[in-house]
Length: 225
Image 1 (spheres, rainbow, N blue to C red):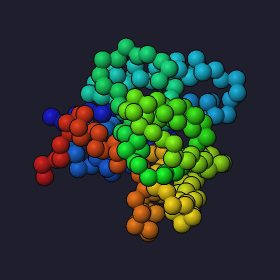
Image 2: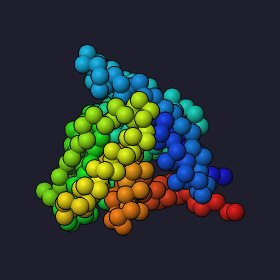
Image 3: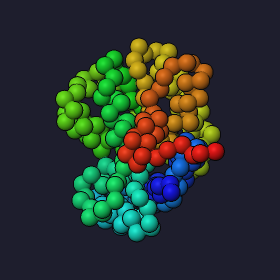
Image 4: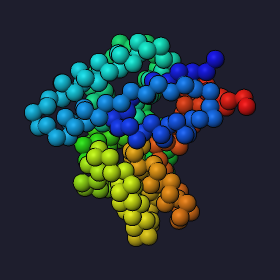
């Protein structure tokens, strides 16, 4: 019998990425989507960190009760919030950016990492620095870039426009900078893949690194057709 994976997303667009990537594997994906928390975190200055932590904890406990073998969190902001909140959940909790961090830490060339959501940068980079320190890796050649006012396009459902703007930015980075390039968020993967096809330049993304990790940690296998 295949594995059941509960997936917590901040936006519906992330579902397609996982479904298409894992379609040939023997794993059932159960999706839970709540964009409301991201709206509160990014737009409500009165919304306290403790309230955000309580909400994520509540979501995780609910998913754990839905007969899943593991939980995958695809939102980098959720992951940053969860890092401060201990959980009493017995099943594995997989965080999409940890395999991504491993890949970033293994790059020895100068590199740039691109974000569209400013609210995720601080927490993500703090966790990346902590991961690198534990692995005895240096990130002194890492440049962080943020596309201002782009994440709102995604949250408004203007996905085509969102992807076009990311594609333009990535092409400019590849042309102007002699650096390896990565995208930090799952919502940026489609644009990154298109640019890879057009330029033949590898762009590290959290979906590719996640797949390798899921195969190892959950021991999922290809479907027998």
